[in-house]
Image (cartoon, rainbow, N blue to C red):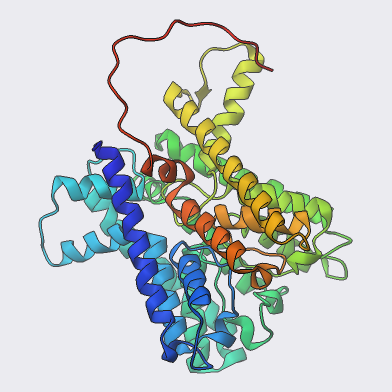
Length: 443
């Protein structure tokens, strides 16, 4: 078996086992407030939490007990950082030797550029994640404790900090209103800005963290990967915010003060990539706002992060490739470096596979439930495969078959559509003879 395929399958199996364990725990009577939870709701929630998505078949606060919520929180943390990352970190604490096979699997799991230094990176990832989540929880507590009381306020702060940093999208705001997400905090600058910061930091990727810590503010010394991620993330955030201000000014942002509109637009720009929270009613977005949200969901975060989607680097590579073709240039250059041909091929493959899966799944769900509008179905499917967690409200209305389709998409999205396809690929046969070349017309 090809080593790369076996590593990919190992990661896929690991996530499947975590989902199975989570489903079992959430199926226990102690997990649900009613004392019973159907297996489909438990499975869907376990998939969504482990794959840090946030689509919920039942309101997290109103359906699940404290035990159930803690199970969900643990799955979000393990799913966000990666089970291999946490496993190796524990092994390092126990002073166990990390072999080459573990390093290879870890390299694939964390999505680093090279195997060298991957164990050191893992230590930085776990320690950095806990520090950032702790800071986020402390800041959220300033707003949550006065509103919910000391004990509940601290618990809510920790839960939402972890969920935001891991781009999980699960919330406990059902205490106010079921499925309300963060709409009660649309004008709270502290909560909005802290959640946005946690989402962005969690979504830029662990390699970028390491690069920034190593070279501080010396941008020219950063890896090409880090430069692309930082510039594209900032660009998408700023452009997205401006477009939401324009598109939603007379829709979901109507009646707000200028400061509240800015906060709402910023949050609406950040959360589709790929956190799943919302401070405005997603179902009430304008047509332009809905389309923009779908685009941002499709792009997602950055490679080797807690986020899903086609990734910011994929977008950057394809845009630069298109510009090179328009200008008649053979090379694709960025920040004084030339991209390799295999990067372009992989970027194309990711987009084609993601779009194909989304198209097939959308058609299947619409055929199964013709009463749901096409916009709502496509929105749900894109949210699932890009592990976003935003919804127009149809998740709980999906039938068994549709929920299983959405759950499978979430699983594919967490593994990465290309990685999921590689699970079923066979080892390429060695062939010294190549077929004759012939041109075709494209475009």
